[in-house]
Image (cartoon, rainbow, N blue to C red):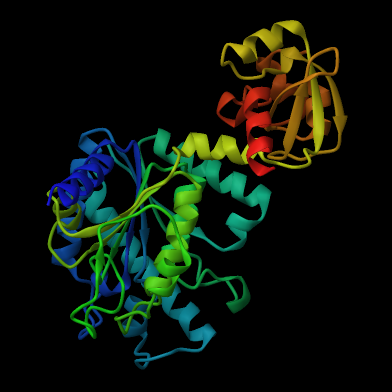
Length: 392
């Protein structure tokens, strides 16, 4: 009993204390399986939870299924599997209805609701990933709630996520979220399907995705959803690698997030590091940086004090790289002191090096970041050596 209380307390505090939370809502919760209509009473209760979280200062991203399920009823499409073109047609109709519902329930004088449609390529191609990440960060900084779904109307079968569990995990990774909550038709991870095996073991906490954990995955219990436990385990792997806590909880009760906070049965996946630490570990572990930035003594001192690298401190550029690529940072003697992700291409760094941040827009033709490498994207040499040692 004490162990269960500790797990519940840790999960509760993680959801309450998280600065940035991604909440994923499944089709089976949003859409009544008998009528095909929006489950409005449930959605109103979820909106209450989200508004309450916002009032205590948390940033919220909502990843919502349901567009195809809503659109197929409006278009009179048959139950069961649909060909891709009919899924895309249903998504185009249903997405409007879904977005309108979220706008009506969540938007007020202080909160705007934004619709963001993503494809698999938006998280796999580096430039599109960075653009999507920047958009999400800008929306959150401006106080908006992004509502995200896969862009089913343009994605082909070959470039789809196919489920919003993994999409939600990619969004959590992209946004450096602290916590991901998957509201589902199940209340957590079991050793077997509890609907078929009354002796199935429930797991309140998971600290790593082992072969045994992967073997527990089953199919979706819903006729309108595309995800099952297998997609949730895949999502957990992405979230844990990003340093993000993840929770699988039943979404069926009214006010499901409040229920999780009150100690409702759920499974928490516990990462080994924070989002920032996980990101820096990944940066440090890059085997072959794309280039080198030479910096002056003043910039060296600034980095050692935890500052970002500004263009004024850059004195040399070698290699060819694009925005978002990993680069080494070296002093005037050629000694590598740090590694980071460049906010500019090598060509643009050559244009702005040695200049003030206020001159960047005039020099490169667009307004980018003030820093060449932001401190959140920078790892000092000690961290690089530790990562290399761990890999050896």
